[in-house]
Image (cartoon, rainbow, N blue to C red; front, side, top):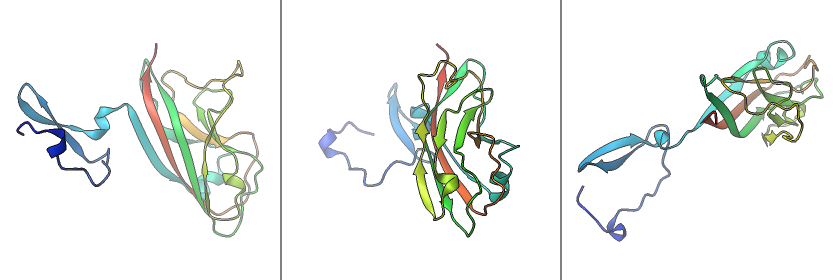
Length: 172
């Protein structure tokens, strides 16, 4: 690629897709490409908690993000959820939360999603970091969905879709 003035470059009209697009760069006079995702340590995971999984959260937590490896931790940046309401609300008065594997308190909460009676979305809330026993960034631990308290959602029939944006950070 010959040298060009910035004003002579073609404008990008669509957003970069971090998972599929690559960006050119020049190293030692050779044009190479790097994936947009490799430019940062941030990642995104999406998925669906099925009705069956939600009804079992009381006893069986659900994996959201795998452990990053020795010397690293997961820093959750954002968590969002959408419920596709069918006909019956979940019989639960608790929050759907994201917990590190051995944590004694949740890292993030989706406070109203389990009580929804319409199709809706919710932005997650970072939990109180001022509590001495809180465990928010634990080395080499996976992150799981489970309820805040031991309240059994005994009824309900709606899937919950989620998106979690997170970074993998190295231990200081």
